[in-house]
Length: 292
Image 1: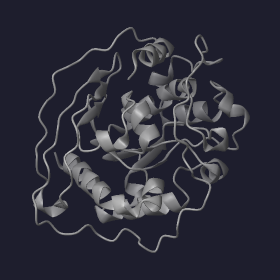
Image 2 (image 1 turned 30 degrees about the vertical axis):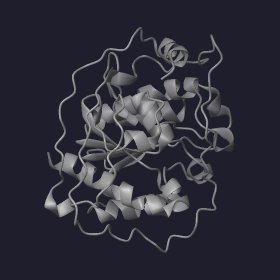
Image 3 (image 1 turned 90 degrees about the horizontal axis):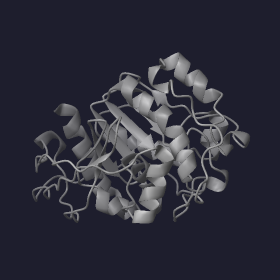
Image 4 (image 1 turned 60 degrees about the vertical axis):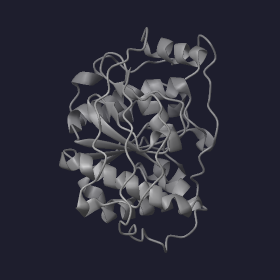
């Protein structure tokens, strides 16, 4: 992360500095039940363990899967091409110096239970997105799930229905979960933002910072065995990184001590189906975390 942007982000979050920690090795192969197609080894890059105090960088490279493994399953090949409202925009939104959320979430979020947290999110006005939303998108699924899926930000359909991943990308996500033996209602699905950014633009720094306490509390209440971050916006905001998904996948990250697997967003896979093999490897890595 560029130094100026890093300082800017940390200033908004009230964090003074980064602290590195030693990384623990990750096992290089997957169980036979979830054996993967061979994938290219990813370049080494720093990664971050987010804690309640300060984030810390924790890179661990993963070896390539052994050759001669079965092909990935067909993930709903009949899913129609992506032509709906979800079209993530490239580029980063930079918060002007000195700009902060007008209304920060109250500092008691970490003590809220599920009903209280959901009520707080529904009435949140911590950033300007509340003025244009139809519904908040709190999250959906098993609140005691072993796997937490974190997406980017709500789109038009999600804003209308108040539920994450309800369009074609959601159909593919359901198929991806089914491929590893999970139904949608067996996992918990949430987003980096609880409100839709106008025009499906990327979240601004102050918006992500304002929403972070809600997601952090959801993670603490669920206590999943693993987190699967889908998409660039989700991975960069959760892990405080500016690296591309292609450089983050295949590595071990942690958020509040919970293993994080980074993979491509289903909407990206609908536009680039040749990348499904890589996501299949990521899904297998997530399954292995669930079995530890």
